[in-house]
Image (cartoon, rainbow, N blue to C red):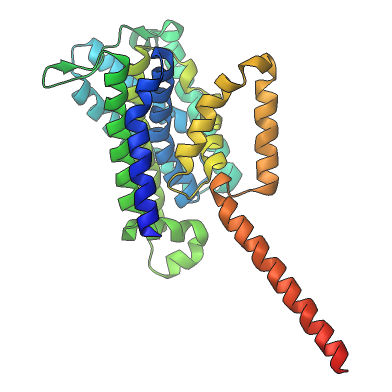
Length: 328
């Protein structure tokens, strides 16, 4: 099984490396846009899928990363320092957002994070002296490394791809570390986890903080990708869309955000012919998925295995009952 996974991983990496050469500029832009959302949703998957916290304000972290990079780069700070500042701000905000999670859970936490996201968007719109308000910030530069500027669509795609791979590998390491086991224990049964010595408060705050850093990195990359930002890409609707991406792909699966983000980014392009009916179709798919596959698309194999096992148990029960009747 490990050899198969390794082979599939190498094959996927090769596909990601050669993919941009088969697309035009807009196609490469969409691939890069997808990778940006993959990075952000990897962090959200840690919060929702592994720690089991219902958070709907992830776009605020995404926006902090974007705006901090844009503002600082406009002031003459280079991309790397601006991204680092955004990461620190997102980490601190994640700790602050995590405190309500210590007192409220489930849908109450979702409402609290939605409110925080809305407050963030209001600040972006009203503090024009800093954020440009609804006019936004334009002319955001592309990053450079050792004098090379990632101006073109394909070079910037590879730049973001490296970040996405690093983010994925770091999350893989984290999930397979003792920290990851503590996060999953928090998700499965907080009371039992606390009885086993897991510090619930600490890991709740860490989940939000680390997830926020992922979104902050994605926001910095997003700002340099589009080179213009305004409050719209960071509103509550985007937070809900991010949450749906994680749920669609499969919360608690490492590849869940990859698949979910792919659907969330490319489905609107495939469904352009439906015009205004896209949201209705997308919502219908989500509803059906929640009915038949509540664990997301990547839970299909486990769902089929569980169904086969249930049928086998039922057949064995009926066979045993038939034998009992014949014996009587």
